[in-house]
Amino acid sequence: MFKKMCKKCCHSKCTDTAQLILRIGVGIIFILSGFGKLFGAGGIEQFTKALAGLQFPIPAFFAYLVGAVEFFGGIAMLLGIFTDITAILLAIIMAVAFVAVKSKNGWLPAGNVDVALFAASLAIFFGGPGKFSVLKKLKNSSPCACAQDENKKAEESVPPVEENQKTE
Image (cartoon, rainbow, N blue to C red):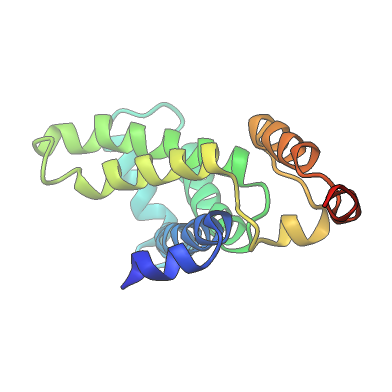
């Protein structure tokens, strides 16, 4: 059923919809995670103690940094702004969480969510925010240079309608 829907619409519209769904899912997860670290029960003090227990240098600094990146990065993902830098920062956080925390408790299944969020963050980085983003509404460009080149090539390869009608 969904494949038929995608065949009816153009491929880029389906890709943009997929990117929106991915951004919404990732954004909500990181907003909730960051909010819990910053403002939740136990909040930043509990997270700082957890980082200190893992021998992180300057645990209070990293607790605030991770909480803020997750919370505000999640908001940025929802809106589709600054997705390139946000996605890389979130991917780094997930990689560190997987190696530093989950490896102590057995890699999998303890780290399943971290691996999924790492992969999703990289997918957003390489795919860009998609058409349905605040960034696209503000300026009609992609943060990915290769996507800009492909858009430019596609526009150049399609002749204007007037020229097609003249040749018939």
